[in-house]
Each structure stands twice: as C-alpha cells, then as structure tokens.
Image (cartoon, rainbow, N blue to C red; front, side, top):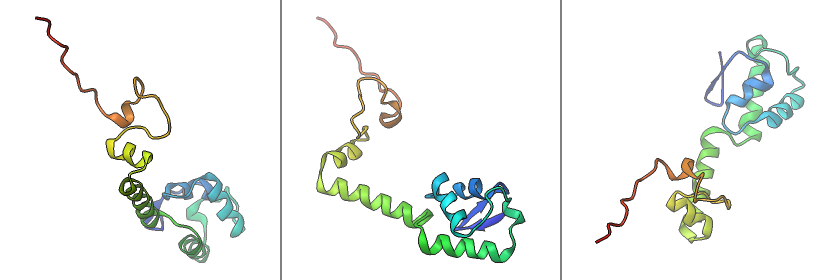
Length: 122
C-alpha cells in the first residue's frame, strides 16, 4: 500500500486510487496522470518507486490537499460566520445555506427530529 500525502492509497488503478486523497477527485486525478504521462490503468503497487516519488512531489507542490485544504475550508467558514453574512448565519445555526427548503427534507443539516409538545387547550 503506497502512502501519498499522508494517506494510505489502496492498490487500485492510479486515477481511482488518487481519489482517496481529500481534495483530489476524478478530473484532478486524470490531470495528474496526464502531467506525469502515467497510464490510468496501471495499479499503484506496479509503479516504480521513482515514479511514486514524482507523484508525491507533484501533489505536494501543485495541489492543496488533506490538512492544508481542510484548514482553508474551516477558515473560510469561520470568516463567513465572523462577518455575519447570510451564509455565515446559516452555518452558525446548522441549517442548509444554498436555498434548500427546511420545512421538510433538511434532516441532514438539522439533525434528529426534536419533538415539540402541542399546545394544551384549557
């Protein structure tokens, strides 16, 4: 199992294995394979050590992945909350922030249902 950007990458085709790194999707993985002239169908364990080193070097220098990317995302969200914009307020309240409805179908963001007792009639 190869280790790239602090992640144990499984022994799969190169373009699929790279997607296990946070911040690298299918298109970025294909782009990386193109830059290094790698065959996408080659398994990670079949790559020679010098090619793996080139792969590590390219990802470290040209792409923001894993810890650096997570930190940047967290800081961006914190900035939105600090300036008090609409998106920041929605983050703070734990609600959807891209215009989705909340009367129904917002359980992922809102969490488990909190039952509210009905009003008693006297």
